[in-house]
Length: 328
Image: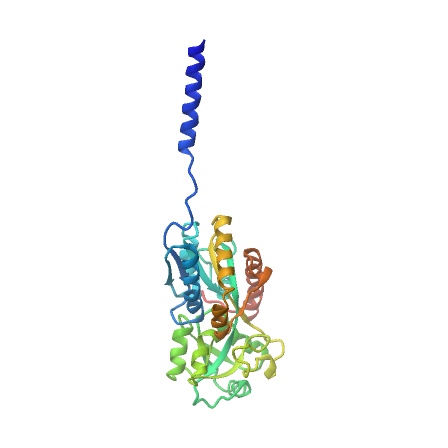
């Protein structure tokens, strides 16, 4: 009897050891390099912001953080790549409001902006700005609206890409005023600015963050900002609404997303690291110098950012349908 009980106990012990040996402990996070995929070319506001955030994550998480540019199709190429990445927090997506505009502008996408991502952190908002070379005869928005009024040819403007907030900002002028606008799309604000500087295109609509250094150096002149209020970075530049088009408003958010299914604990850790990192006064000053209004308090949670993305998917879907914008 004792031998039978002993054999049974040993058998149970072996089963217990086998079960314990088979249990998989979650891998520590992060366990390797983290990649932030930027959906636009180097030099634009989204790229600049990612390169500001990478050292914050690297220092706090103890792993290398690299920025990888995957421009094209207003961010859809980079977004598609990250949507298919492993949901483990090692591949992140740096986006702006284009992410919420694209479904209403492009044909069927090979990913779902609503279902294939989870929100991590919204860094803040930055307006777009209408800029011209210093030699341009356009001194303010009124000059532009007069120059673009039919029967004059459409006013060409360089945008940061088809379907971007800057594209939409130009198109929305046609809803607000009797003008004709026609975009010249680029793969990011950096290339768009390069052609405005060289005189290839006489007008640019770009993020204030990407244009700020050039404006400060006198290499560009600003006609208007698209935000509902003037930006602290460009206090002397009036809004579009101030210059005779009340109700005109298009602010742009910038934030980090992760593939859907990324563990909540990983998302929360990334969020906390960024919240803490952006509490640094020097970094705040740098970002405000680039035109950002930073997210604060409850607006900085993953849940709040997720709600903002969902809202703008609906809002921009309505606007693009009203404009009839399609880029199939």
